[in-house]
Amino acid sequence: MFETLIKTLEEDKFLTLETTPPHEPTMDNIIEKIEQFNLDKKVDGFSTTDNPLAKLKYGAMFASIKLQQKFQKPVITTMSMRDKNKIALQSDLIGGNDFDLRAVLALTGDPANMSDQPRAKGVFESNSSMLLEIINSFNNGMDYSGKPFKIKPKPIYPFSVMNSHAKNLKSLEKKMFKKVSNKTRGIITQPVYDLENAKQLIGYMENVQNEFHDDRKKSQLIIGIFPITRLRTAQFLSSHVPGIYVPQDWIDKLAAASKISVEEEYKVGMELSSNVLKSIQAIHPKIHLMTANKFDVANELIS
Image (cartoon, rainbow, N blue to C red; front, side, top):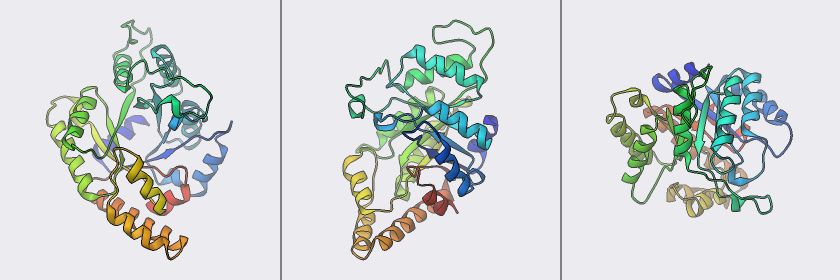
């Protein structure tokens, strides 16, 4: 399953869909919506988020098990450095390996002071680089302390994330190099809304790939897509989320549409989102789709 996912990422068109587990003790609602739109037939795999914005959710690893067993599709499990030290992270990797959870998206994590839980404190023993190092140790048959496992874990495939924009765009290439050095198999970007922005990122990744002459050369860039259907979403992302660039013409078109009707605003947003998705897929068909569990929007976009 995971070997096929990685081969598809390296050689073919690639599409994964993000799911955010709910603030509920069940994944049934999400599973039902995926089934409703047959999304499991339209993507190569899913991902599960790990308490994004430090808000309490159903656990990412348990959500991954549910999705993977239900749909027989690989799931990229997000693991954050915010909430666990190296003991807990390794313990989860050991247990997850037994359940065949073998793709891990390594995140540093959002600050704990954003949490909806009173006086929550972050662990942050290190950043996501440590988790990539831990995974490398597991893939070499030992834990992070160097103690060998009697039974070698099944191969784990690490993924990373990075910003899609920066004041100094060249700095993104340096971050890509560091992640590839740590043997990440795929780098998922923050949402991209401009073809030229995508071309810059693709060019940087090609430069990084050319620096290596081993399996790290096969590391791939995965462009993040988050459809915008409301003016206020475009304005929020543009003004308050670092590492994302929303072109001014998107904001202008959505502003004009919002004065007509909510329906026109949605229509224009979907047209803009669909056009940028198609233009990026034409040159780099490796996409990670994020819709904040709006699976009807995901279905409309990829259908």
